[in-house]
Length: 141
Image: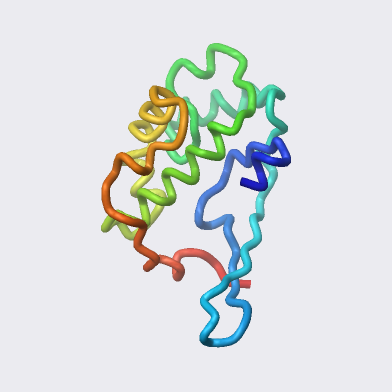
């Protein structure tokens, strides 16, 4: 939400780029989070470098919110890019797949197509509540 409030599309928001640590006492389940790796970030309504989009499409790197054909026209950074990563992470947490990259290889394009078709958040279409079992997949600081 704060990325959208700041009009920033992270463009590489994945578990490896989320750092966290527990705050408060042992009875307090609160965590503090930091996002890292803003190298690919762009301000909303600003063009995403064509070379970046082409590379993602050409290498079929489904961790990113681009699909075949996107390299043919200018892509502007938008809230949809952040939502793609949030929906993908939530769906991965619900899955039995251990690694985010493996999950995205299998589901990334489907998530993106569904998000674009619906024009918003898709995770409520996927059933079960988010499991909070993969905190070991994110780095602590």
